[in-house]
Figure 1 (cartoon, rainbow, N blue to C red):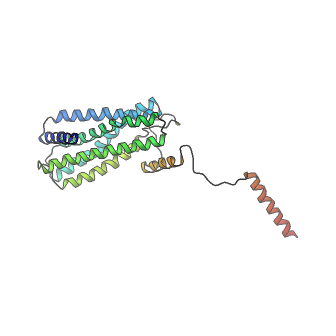
Figure 2 (figure 1 turned 45 degrees about the horizontal axis):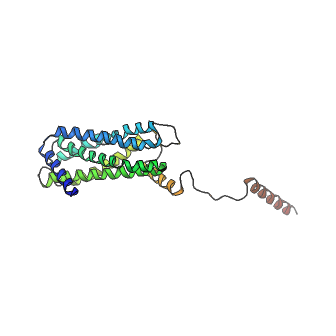
Figure 3 (figure 1 turned 135 degrees about the vertical axis):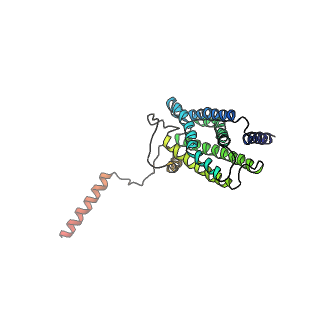
Length: 255
């Protein structure tokens, strides 16, 4: 029942956007939802390292979404026009912002989950990976809804060309890569309790190596490093044995 109701609500939203009804209100509502709920989730993510990090992440997460949109949207809209789309800029922007607002709603809905792990003692690496999975998952759902909206405009209204759907899928992948790179440059979001507060921290490497490092830390245990085989004797005793054997060898040669 709830699935059908959600489908009806989305189709009504898509219809109103395609017809140009109440676009300014929809844009304002989607933008406000995106900013408020991303700030809420950012504060939740940063709370692990303290109030300063919570405030910082609450500011940076909305900037992450809006910055990625500002970089990717112009090219996306121009290409849509070139391939024959009859949707105007406010209509396409309303669909994209609506999809991102839905992602923000999903992130806000997952706050109780992340708070549970935070309060029950989960470590930095687990929480970092948890937030990565949740943000990527919410983004995927948002892109799926955007695809659904453009497909609606294509199949039921005839104002969006079918060949542009492939372009939209490529753009969604590009949007993800730009967002990941921007998140890497805006880090930290979670913050490490063992380090002093930093608004921005530029590390060598990239997002993917950082995820692999966090997975390794979870595998070995936080605070542990790779165990290297060592001799059971102190290094001074080993050195003495080596020097003694050399002396014995020299005396044997002298004889």
